[in-house]
Length: 196
Image 1 (cartoon, rainbow, N blue to C red):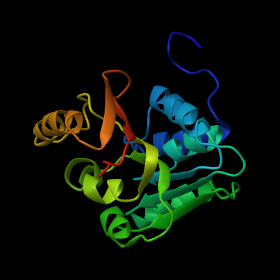
Image 2 (cartoon, rainbow, N blue to C red):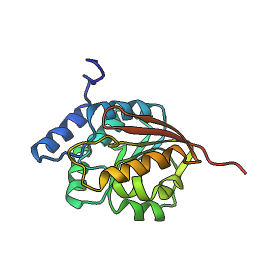
Image 3 (cartoon, rainbow, N blue to C red):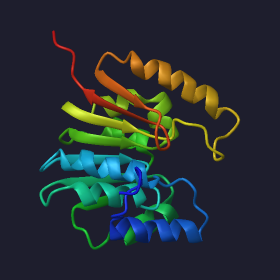
Image 4 (spheres, rainbow, N blue to C red):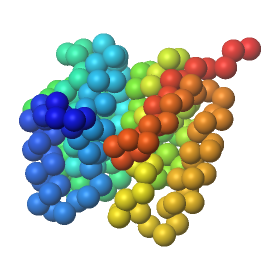
């Protein structure tokens, strides 16, 4: 490591980032966030991992780099062209499934086994509908969200949304939370279902 920037970029993450750079897609996970995702995925052997907002596959590739052979990743992406690129980038890894869908609708309707780690990288599920994320988490699951520090991709109404999120997430009764004002700004929480 040089400072806190990873020097061991997973090949699939590098491939996805090169595609993002060529297309001037500026919404991918930055390398420090990716390295954290890789570490957290490694803590869930055989885990079921969900990425809400897969984009072009940069974050997905970092998650896959940390996952063991028995872990599985589902990535949700609403934009068909973007999802197609992500699917192509990750095609060689049978642990990944990319679904073209509205994430909120998919999460509302999902009735499969709960997830052990979720990386939320979309506006709706992060800021407005965390309830549909939480209902699909296993006890002890990790909840990760990024893009909580100002950057030049933010719209005019985004700062107020982030400020509200940062206040709300700290008092979320089902999460044990740490805020990280580092990289793009992250929250990492452990989901604990309330007893009784």
